[in-house]
Image (cartoon, rainbow, N blue to C red; front, side):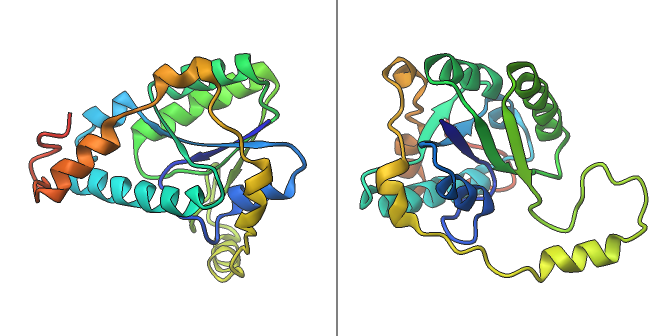
Length: 201
């Protein structure tokens, strides 16, 4: 199977990893991971989790009409991916690159190492004008312009009805129940912005 790992890219339109997964022949599992390190990170505050909660709920409402969903898991990404791989071998892990925070960069280094050890092809798509691994600015303007003016990636979501997989039963314990609790907190108007994630745990 192939796995689409949603991170900050919470949308079903103009999404290269999702389009790639649909174009490939193999079945696909859609996941979002609530990571312990991000729950503790001061950069992730109430308004961040509010946006994430709303986005995932809205995306899953759309996907429910196709009989599928983004499976919301909680835990360390490498351990969850290992459990998935043990149950159903992963051929490709598809995601966007994530830039901005050391905690997510370090996590991606660990996931990349794990993928190489397992022989899994992790395809990371550039998400903005930032290029990882660039050693100088030569050609940067041209590259930035290419990325930022690229045509929208068109996606035929209807194909997911036949391709998307259910979460393996042995991973049921990794499902996160936080979104349900958070949606109640946010519905009550309790969204913390400046003082961290208040009453979200």
